[in-house]
Length: 235
Image (tube, rainbow, N blue to C red; front, top):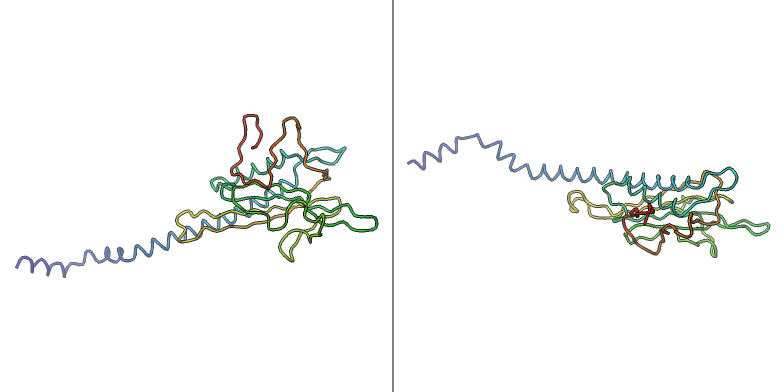
């Protein structure tokens, strides 16, 4: 009788109804909330990668000696500073551990008498551990076989004779904040281009001190986060 009475009281009891509904609905609400958070983070990372590409192209187009007597020389150390600055701006993204940047100088070859020069990639510098190569050409392209500028088909950018365009390509493997089940790991791709503002010495990238040269960010190596040595050089 006591068991039967307790069962009847349980049937009449309504105090656990809300908790039951919450227990049934919580997994769906939690999943939707986490999914939305991951989507928001993905959108922010996309925006940040795009802005980093623009900042790097802009900064690389401005660097160089300040002189009113000669064209501005650009040094390997200047390009290293641009790369290290991007690492600082990227913050917790670990940009060069999970991504790779390619900085190219698009220029025009010296034209033959009565002719026109070709678009070509004069020099190219890269940094990042991710195994990505430039989608738009490599250093020296255009010297033998003409190239049609740099960029997506139909949206190419071009350099003018005696000037240069800095073209930056940045690829980053998205790192999920919560779970790859919401957004799988895949690459975010951004490009940006700026025309060099001032008259620049286009002969080469120079070394400030040939006896103690700065690191050359070769596109044949895949190195991660840049560091500053005890002598203040970026490695």
